[in-house]
Image 1 (spheres, rainbow, N blue to C red):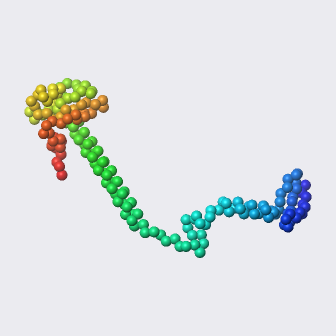
Image 2: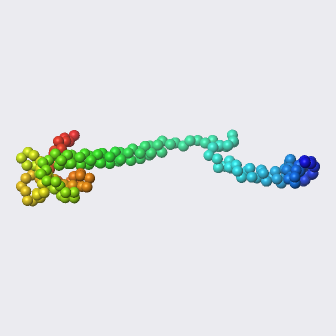
Length: 175
């Protein structure tokens, strides 16, 4: 059952609707209205902190000269990318050298089965390449390199022979 009564609170008419003991107000009192306005102001950011003008009376926003910012950014990015490209190029060249040394060893004459972790010596004799267990101090043939066989069956260069230019062995021309 809905009953309607009219009260006057602080000069404003307030209508109350009662149903089962619940009371709802049709109009707010001045105190309630002021509290609501204060809460709305708390939720809304101040115009002083907005990154853009909020009224026609606000001072105009003039963009800054960003050419020095752009120039610094471009030079920093360019320098960093040039450095990365140089590192990639060096890694590429090391990988190619590693491949070429492995190719030389596997194409050489091998008359024994090398053991993983062992150091072996690559020689050039009578126009052919041969892998040997004999150290360069004990054999008079031209020593190209000393290599270690890794677990992954790749040969790692321990040292190169005196006067040996790897690029010439691999048939790579500088230029």
